[in-house]
Image 1 (cartoon, rainbow, N blue to C red):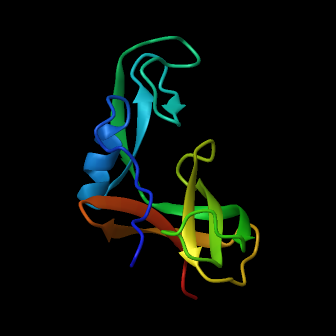
Image 2 (cartoon, rainbow, N blue to C red):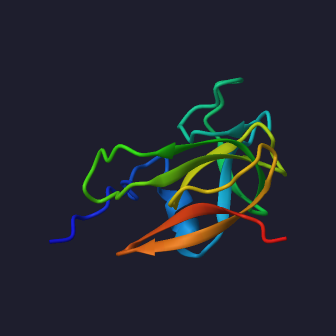
Length: 134
């Protein structure tokens, strides 16, 4: 029997626009409309100016590898090991970092160029990251 992957709640008030954009294979970041701060992780109030007016802006989906780790110990049956968990810093917005995972053990380097790819799992589309091919 194959176990289901753990998937995000795509109907949450604060993050639903992110998941809707991902379903269209677009990567978006929430911004405060009052002070222009990128807000990541998404929330209802700006952490800098406490404004409540926010909007979602599309980003390129290009980044640099900030960090990674290889997961060897399986913590959930739906996520077989080994896999590489990556932390990617966006090129357009260096203050924003996204997590992703890739199957297996990869040969990676800090600052390595990464690109977003969209993985469909059931009714959910997950932004994932992969090294840019040379």
